[in-house]
Length: 304
Image (tube, rainbow, N blue to C red; front, side):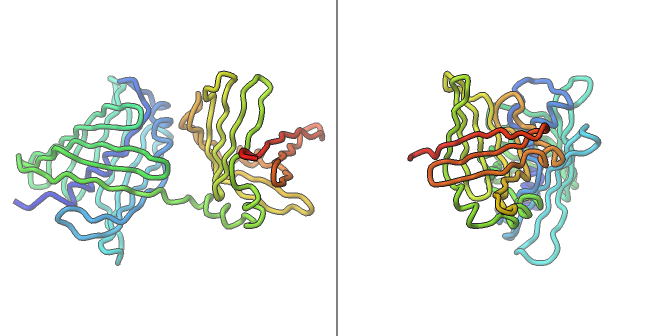
């Protein structure tokens, strides 16, 4: 029997891209879109599968059917040369009438499907399927999202009762066109002035922490008790606007709080930019109001 190694694993990689923070056994289409939001986009990395040639794996996760399902495709380029081969394609959707998440995938080795059990930062699926040669196949799949890395693993695999080797790979998030565009637009000197951690006091006794690392911003709001109310991460750019300096936001995703998992549409981000001033100890946002007045927020640099 032909060994099911590299190709079987690519089916597993695709199936692994399932939601990481749905805690209930049942879900709606809204839950599906929100839970998979952190995984939307492109992931890529150099891998060397057991028994297969080294190459580059690329996984694309995108919404389809007006939000009714999420499409997942996996491509593989052997040795980084030539054209990438489409290995798997499938969907994740809410299965009716049970309202439980289920996945269906087809690949060059066969087809698989299965339900999932989801905890805070991991997703485990016992997938079953049939190879193109009619061999029964099972795989236990796990995934973990770690910042801008996707850690994928498989274990307990069997094809016609013959073990499939365990494997683990790490893929990196590929910046979107918007992120790359904003990074290219930023004035390097202005961006360098903003690097670090800034703190803003809130009127309710809480505070806000803004951390800028490169052209990425992480902003977290804390209440008076020190608990996190909300957090988001964004891709930013800064440019000169005449005699002023302007701060713009290209992408934004909420990572904690009631809006966790929601990505803000590009059209709304156009209104979030503002003029700012900065020195070694203070960062001042100057927001324009519709009535022609301005509102300022003054941050102090943490550690000074």
